Image (cartoon, rainbow, N blue to C red):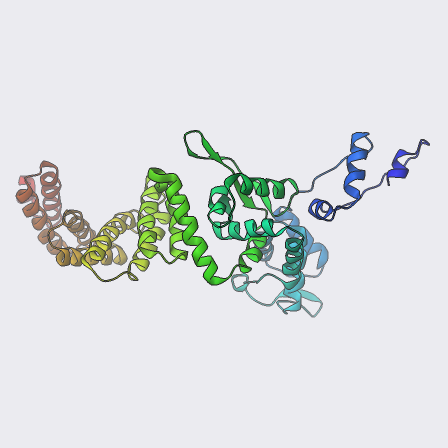
Length: 410
C-alpha cells in the first residue's frame, strides 16, 4: 500500500480498507506506521465508524434473513444488548441461531420465543474475543480493569486506587493509555473531589467488556473490593459523600456492609425526591427496607424502619395515590412501629397519612377518629402549625360526613 500510494506515476485508483484500531496498536502492526505516513502526505483519509443505530440493526436483520417474520422487539433487544456494536450483533445473532431461538420454518425465519423471554448470555465467541484482547495487556492494566469493573460501568480513578497498589497518577496514566488506544475504556468528564482537586472519570466502551472482566474477579475478592471502594470514596468526599449516595449504597451492599448501605439508600432517596424522581425514591426506600431486615432486631432498627416507612408513605401517595392499598399498608406499618418505639415526632405525619387514606376511600368514621387523635396531639404540643393541620383534618372528615355546623367550627 505504501509503495502504490507513493509512486510518481498517476493512477486512477481508490483503495478502501477496514481495521480495528485497538488490535493494530496492541499487536504493533505495520499498518499503523503506514497509515500515519500516508495521512501526513495527504494521500489517505480515515473515517472512524461509530456504532450502528437501531434502524441499521433492523436493516441488517432484513438483509440477512430476507424471508423473515421477526417482531420489531427483536431489533430493539439486539440494539440494547450490543449498543450497536456490529461485531457483537453478528455474534449474538449466530448464537440465537445455534440455540434454536431463531429458526427457519417453512421458508420463513421466526423467533421461537417471545421478545420478553430473550435473555441471552454472552456468546462464547464474544467472550473469547474479549479474553484475547485482555491477555495482550500488561498485568498492571489487567488489574486496573478488574478493579474498574467492580467500581462500575462508569468510575473514577480514585475508586480504582482503592483496589490496586498504585497511586492516583499511575492509575490515571494506565486508564489514559487504554483510552488513547481505543481499548476497553473511554474518557468522561473530570470530577472535582474537593476545591482544587480533580480526578479522571472513565467508562467501559461496552457493557460486554465490563461483564467479561467482572467475571474474572473471584466472588470473595469482589466483596472486599466493593467495601474498600466504598470506604475510599466515602473518606475522600467527606461531608459531600451524600452526593454519591446511590453509588456508595451499591458498594456497601455488595461489600456486605448492610448498615451503611441502608444509610446511603435513605440519602439516595432524599436526593431523588429533590429532583421529584418519585419512582427512583421508592426503589431506594424499598431496597433499604429489605436490607434493614438483615440487621439485628433492636430499638435502633425499629426507629430506622419508621423513618423509612414514613418517607415511603409520602412518596407513594404521589405515585400510587392516597387510596392505594399499598399506601395504606405502609402507613399502617409505620403506626405499628410508632407504638413499638413510643412517643415519636413521626406519629403526626403517620396519622395524617392514615387519615387521608381512609378519607379518600370514603371510610369517614375511621378518618374522623384519626383526625381527632391528630387534634389531641397538636393541642398537647401547642404547635400552631400542627393545630392548623389537625383542625383541617377534622373539618374535612366532618364535611364529608355532612356534619356542616361542626365542620364550620373547625
